[in-house]
Every structure is written in C-alpha cells, then in structure tokens.
Length: 136
Figure 1 (cartoon, rainbow, N blue to C red):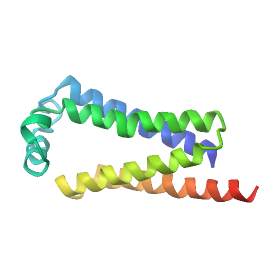
Figure 2: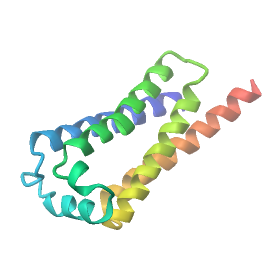
Figure 3: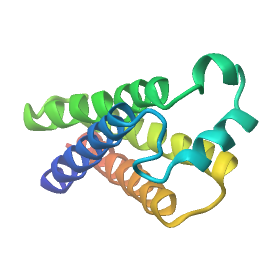
Figure 4: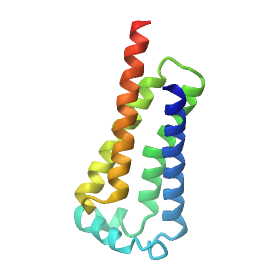
C-alpha cells in the first residue's frame, strides 16, 4: 500500500507542478485553449479583477495546495514517518475539495472526474493505513 501511495502522491504532485507551469508559461491560457476557463473563473469567483486577470495566481494556489502538500506527503511516506498516512489523508481531502470547486466553476469534465477519483483513492488508502497502524 505504501509503494502505491508513494507513486500516487508523486504523480499528483508532478501534475500540479506541470499545471502551474502551464499557467505561468502562458498566463492568458490562450496557448492551452484555457481562455474560456479564465472567463468562467471571473464569473464565479470573488475579486475577479484582482485574482483572475490571468492564471498566475491560480498557478501558485495549485502549486501550493496540490503540489507542495503531495510532495510533503511523499517525503513522509519515504521516511516511513508515523504521520505519513495523516498527510496523505489531508492531501486526498484537499484534492477532492479542489475538484468540487472545479465542478462548481466549470462543471463535470473528464480530467476533473479522474482527479477526484485519485483524491478519493488517496483518502481511502490513507484510512486503511491508519487502521493498520492502529492495530499494530
């Protein structure tokens, strides 16, 4: 289970880094066909003229919430730290909340649905690890 979680946390973390990089490489979203998504963010989120002029702030939030946290969880897993399952559980919950926000803004879509499942699997696997930890 731990090997699977190491791979999953690193995969999600790397995906967040790549997503943030895409947002910084082309903050308008034009290169990636994301311009309509920026407009939807402006329509639904607070302070659109401050945080959603482009994708730069969103890239930082993505990097911190779904990149940095996943890498911390992976690090704890590799160190076999007793708090690793708790970190993975937190990451799974954060990812699912992020996706719920995406669904609210953009509706259901393939990538968001897949990442929600990743978060759910992450959280469920962490709960299994915590139960095993408690039994030993």
